[in-house]
Every structure is written in C-alpha cells, then in structure tokens.
Image (tube, rainbow over all chains, first blue to last red):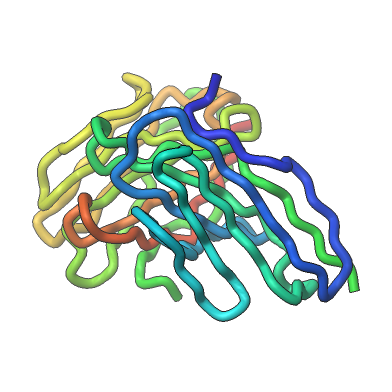
Length: 110
Length: 113
C-alpha cells in the first residue's frame, strides 16, 4: 500500500464547478505539498502545509493532521485548471525527500 | 521560469549509452533533489545534495550517479541505459531542505531507444 493515496484518480468537471481532490497518508509528516503538473510536464508547487488551511486565489488547501488527510479545493473551476494535481509528503523520519501520490488528472470542460 | 534550470529538455539516446543531465538550482538554494517520473512508477526520489555533499539517497540505481559542484549546480549521470530508464527526470531545489518549499525545474524527458 502506498504511503500516499489520492482520490479520485480522474475527475472531469464543467467550468464553474467546485472541485475537491483528496489525499490520505499513513505516516507522520512534517509537511504536505500540493503540486500541479501541466501537460507539458513541468511541476509547480501550489502549497506547503503543516497545519490548518491555506488559500491562494481560487485554490484552497486544508490538512487534518490527526486524521492524516488533506484536501485541495478549486472554486469556480476554469479550463486552464486542467492538469494533474499531485499530493506529496515529507515524512517525519525521511528527511527532506518527498513521497508522492499517484496524482489526480483534472479536466475542466468549457 | 521557476528559477531552476534543467538541460537538456529532451534527450533521445540508444540503449547502453551514457548521458548527463544538468540542473542549476534557484539562486540561494543549497539543496538539490533529483526525481524520476515514469509511467509505471510515478514520481520517485533518487538523491539529494546539500551544499555539495550527498544528503540522502532513494531508489537510485547503481548505474546512476550524481554530484553537486561548488557553484551548486548538479549533474545526474545515467549509464548503461536501458529502455526502462525512459522517463522524465526532475530537479528541485530548496533553501535548506527541511523547513522550506521546493522549486521544480521543467524536467528532462529521456527516451531510450
């Protein structure tokens, strides 16, 4: 079983919809990251979380350390949000390396 | 531009060959990480360097090696290439590696034929 599990694997939405991507992990962490990977392949870091909630524009990320769970929300989704969203953790005992989920492929249709 | 520069962007080479991938970290960042993204394994940590010294090793094959130079740029050397080594190789950098975020490069797409 992977240390990081994401759901759903694939998500298709209509423009304007509210989107939620979930991430569960099984080990103690020092931080959790949400990453975005566009079709061209490049990876962009969206959020780094160790507690609570962060917001950047239409993106909101939350984490519940006790439940070992994080969510990424996109409000008023847009076709340009179409990408793979990847959850990654920095384990308490794994130094600064990241362990990744398999990613969620999001497609937002106009 | 993320500030992390990887070259080349694309590389096509034959089995058995040796290639070198290069990464220049974001200005001021001391840590460099190498990750491999393949279709069947997803993103996997390979190796980390901090200020010129190896800090952590992941699932890096013996045929692969890396180093970080005094100017903090890093190179990943892949030798005796096999078809299964075809993947996207990402470099990321961070200030110290423990309390700060990461900046990823745009990756090098390696195709072994």
